[in-house]
Length: 339
Ligand SMILES: NC(=O)c1ccc[n+]([C@@H]2O[C@H](COP(=O)([O-])OP(=O)(O)OC[C@H]3O[C@@H](n4cnc5c(N)ncnc54)[C@H](O)[C@@H]3O)[C@@H](O)[C@H]2O)c1
Image (cartoon, rainbow, N blue to C red; front, side, top):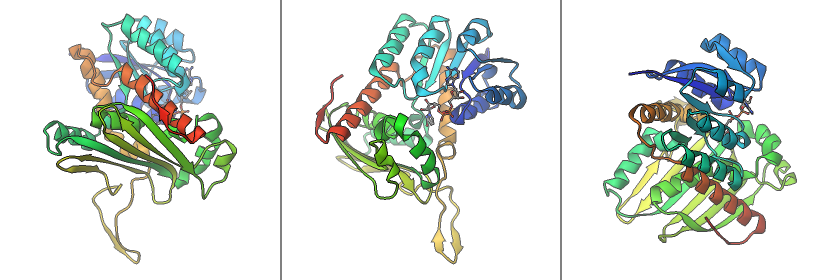
């Protein structure tokens, strides 16, 4: 089968992970072009990955590079115009989450996807491709827990990274826009229904710096969905033990828990502190397999001309829900979510 030629835009923290996967771990893909506004990221693509065609201008990559598809892993506010430009240039598009940083941006991407029904657009909600989450969804579809009626999700970043969260806080849109989008997507996916109401709050006990940008180090949000099901999302930035991502889906006949102990691996350490397991340290470590599987799925969709299960409207809806959550947090009141 013909290999899909990729151009990647953005080679920062996550872009490097995707670039390495495309360049050397996906059988039917090759990385032939790369674009970044940071010179040393282009050096990385050229020197470490052997990418010959590198560009500092995104539109130039689209017009000059020999590519079938573009992977967009740039700063979130760049995603939507870059999605539209790539589709208009006849390229298939993978964009990492979030779809956009405003609803207007998301609509721009929706229109571009509608203009090009023959091209594949794939949104990188990679948790859906993590083997444990996929397995949980299969159990739900097989009726193993009856009717799912509640999702409880926890996402706490490592305390070790808190200084960068403090620095990013004033421009991040706040803890819910910054952190909750994956949990919001999973809640919709598992419950098969969209939230219509949200009530959110936050607190800070350790790092008062967050308060200076009207943000918090911990946030909670409660959702009521159109079909009566419920969600509870807890996000935070101060896990002293590592990276804590955990999801629970409760149904009429049983419960699924994904990663209730965010263990690094199956090794137990017996030492002066007791008998213990280490915690997974970061998102690239916890979701390494998911990043690879989602990109393989994108390549497969292109080759088989199959529409991906996660679409542009999932991107808009999760963004709308995140904004409604942030509004509830700011106003300290129950918010109706309009779509
Ligand atoms: N799916 C996940 O789990 C996950 C995890 C982390 C980040 N992300 C998302 O991935 C994206 C990148 O995040 P990151 O942490 O790697 O950020 P980063 O700041 O480390 O990297 C961003 C990159 O975008 C490039 N860039 C910005 N504007 C550009 C432009 N106009 N043209 C070309 N390149 C441009 C920068 O050069 C940089 O390489 C964000 O949208 C973020 O929300 C997703």
